[in-house]
Amino acid sequence: MEHSRQPAGPETAWYWERLRTRHRSQRIAGIAIFVFGLCLLIAEPLLTPDYNQLTILVLILIALLPVLQGSSLLLANRGPVTPQAVERLRSQERIQLFRQAQGTMLPWQYRRWTRILECILGLLLLLSTVQGALAALRMSQVEFSTLSEKVIAWVFVTLFALISLLLIIDSIYLKPRRARRFAKHSSAELAYRLSLGELVTSNPSKLGQ
Image (spheres, rainbow, N blue to C red):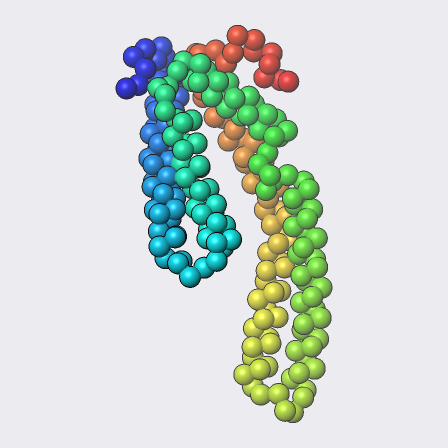
């Protein structure tokens, strides 16, 4: 049974319901994973009677992983939602939104090192595509190459060219643009939550840290 204390404000009630839903879904997932692992644990010795003992032991250890994971989910979400959990989640998300609005805490796919790696990958793939195009040209001049081989070669060249260009454009233009939109969205979301009138924490200066 969930905690009997009622949330004090609209934002707290929203977080409270989110945590209740999360606990419920995590418990259902934990039961499903636990039952799946238990079925594997019971069925493996019956389905693999001809395997040697070492192989059966390894399979049993593998089957124990979902059992342990399911048990961990059940234990972590067995209790009711507490006011401390609500306040902790609210503070964490507001701090995260504050930093995202400043552009100092973006998801990993928008960070500079990710975009640099993506651009390098696109350039390397583009270089390989140029080499493949030259090879396809030489193949088209060879008499014993069939038409299907030439068509397949040019299809692969075109496909890799499109992928390489997509990677380069995504890293140079699309992701920086989406990152700016993400920061604006985080700023608007933070302003909306603050407009509900509930305090972030006992010390608001912690947000800037």
